[in-house]
Image 1 (cartoon, rainbow, N blue to C red):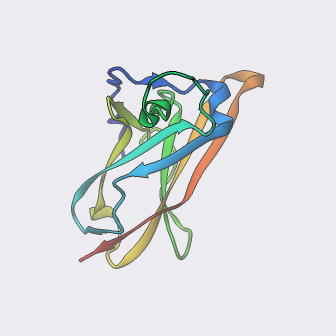
Image 2: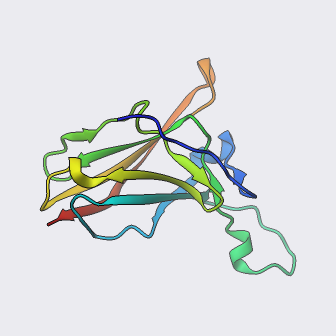
Image 3: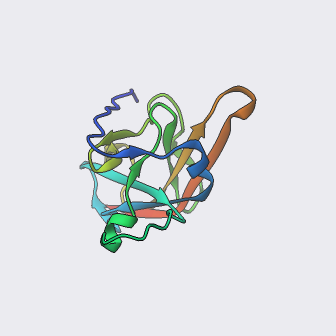
Length: 147
C-alpha cells in the first residue's frame, strides 16, 4: 500500500477543529455490492451537524454546505464485517484525498476476498501536541465484494 493521496479542493471550505466534534459524515454513492478485481472510488462527505442559521434568501441546500476534512490527518480502514479482521489498516497508505466534491479514496478490490462483507471506518486527527484530538467515524459504511 502506498500514499497516492491528492488535494485539489476547489472552492470547498475546510472543516475546522471545532467542527470535528459535531460532524456528520456520510458516504456519497456507496453501493451495497462491488465486483471483485475492480477499482472503486469511495467518496466521504462531511458537514457540520448544526450549521449556523442565517436569515437570507438562500435555498436549504446552500445552508448544508459540504466541507472537506483536514489534509494529511484523515485515514480510512477496511475491516471484514463478520470477523472484524483489519484488511487495510490506518496508516501512511490509507490517507484520504480531496477534490472539489469532497474527500475520497481509491481502492482496488482484488486484495479483498469475494463473497464477503466489509466495512469502512475513518480516523480524523486534528490539532497537535496536548490539544490533539482523534475522532473515529464509520461502522455503518458496509459493502460486499462479489464475483
